[in-house]
Structure formats: C-alpha cells, structure tokens
Length: 143
Image 1 (cartoon, rainbow, N blue to C red):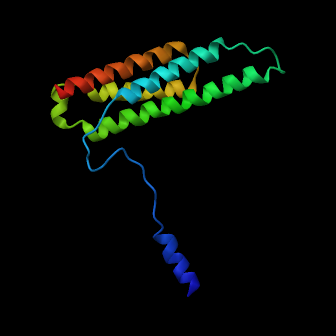
Image 2 (cartoon, rainbow, N blue to C red):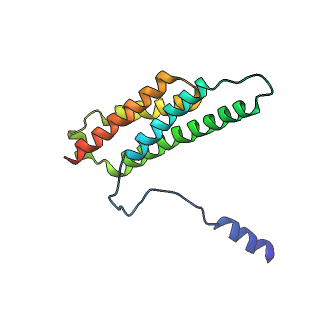
C-alpha cells in the first residue's frame, strides 16, 4: 500500500514554474534588459582592465571571477527579459509597427549568448545597442 501511495505522490508532484505574468497583467518594460546589457558591458570592461599580479594575487583573481559570474548572470537576464516581452506582450498587430521584430529578437538573443560565452567588448557594445533598439521597437509598438 505504501509503495502505491509513493508512486501516486511522485506522479503528481507539483512543479514550480516561473513567469513574468500569465494573467496577463499588461506591465512590460524593456528597461531591465537594457540595464542588464549595460551591466554585461561594464563587467567586460572590469574583467579586461583588472590586473592580476601573479598566482598569489587572490584579490585580483577573485574580482575577475565575480565579474565573470555577474556578466553571465546578466546576459541570461537579458535573454529572459526579452523573451518574456517578445512572447507575452507582442501580438500579430504589433508586427505592422515593428516588421523586423522576430529577426531583431533572434539576433539579440544570439548576442546575449555570445556574451555569456566570451569576454568581448565589441560584442558587449553590440548587446547594449541591440537591447536599446529593442526598447525603441517596444515603444514604437505602443504608439
């Protein structure tokens, strides 16, 4: 009997999911993505300018490690923020105002992934520009 109850419980275990809002609440703002992209760019700058004075420089190594972690976290945040707005806010009628939306989002998400994988000031600047362009597209869709 106990085995049957355990199997039933494991089959119906609740799964935790995360979403911005599936009500829908109508509150969307790309500012979080723009800020996250700027954070990525700043972390790349700190990573590339932090001097490490050899194997005993634990403070320098620690700073770089923290900056890398923050860079990757914020690149992922860019992806999440943009994906939520793209999938939950934008509707077919918005494509008339932003006809290149899908291509714009696809390229932006690829840039965010590139920034997770590399330390590249050029790619970080492109990510900031792409998120700012996405924010403008979002604003245009509301006009």
